[in-house]
Length: 246
Image 1: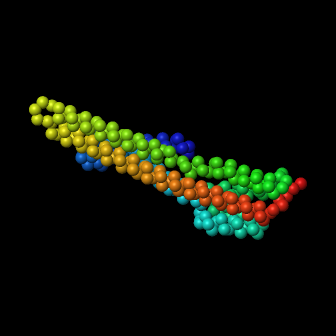
Image 2 (image 1 turned 180 degrees about the vertical axis):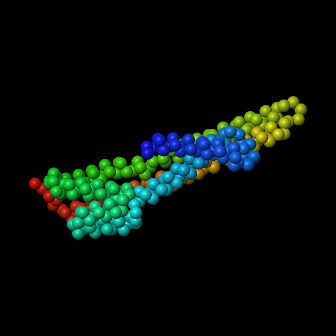
Image 3 (image 1 turned 90 degrees about the vertical axis):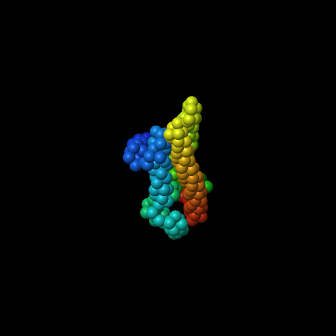
């Protein structure tokens, strides 16, 4: 499913769910926040949806087992001269790191069989280039929906501020009436202002914390993949220093 289609689907479902929650599940004092509360509920639902999606996706990207054990097994197979065994370990592990390393191993296998590259240096350069191209395909998948989280956090703050301003306008309108102020309208205005402020802060704080957490996690994971790829290339270069040439 394309990212734009996924985000649009989440938005539609969140809006429908938020209308239902607003009409049937919220207590009266929160409904006093006005119709803008629907948007805040929708943004909160979207934030948690993207959080769960990122948790699932990053867990899947790590593969089926421990990355440290996987890298150890791949290195051992390479040291034995068993490229097929290293590729089989990648197929068993799966995940982003395994996919990238497998691309490098496939390239090395192709070059050693076809003899397309002469010399160790050129062969390792081709393998490294294949790994970098695989990285360019995998990293965007790790960072998917992080921009959406950041955007929702920013919009939620402004949305809550808009509700706050509208509530204060209602309050001042009630106070501006001749004679005694309309206590009910004054209370509703203050309630609207505070509820929207709180709702906007909840969505924004959750979104910002999630964005920073996942950004750090992706950066660490990308660094780990870089280190693993470099280690694998070095192992290939050391084990097969001469390569094959025509």
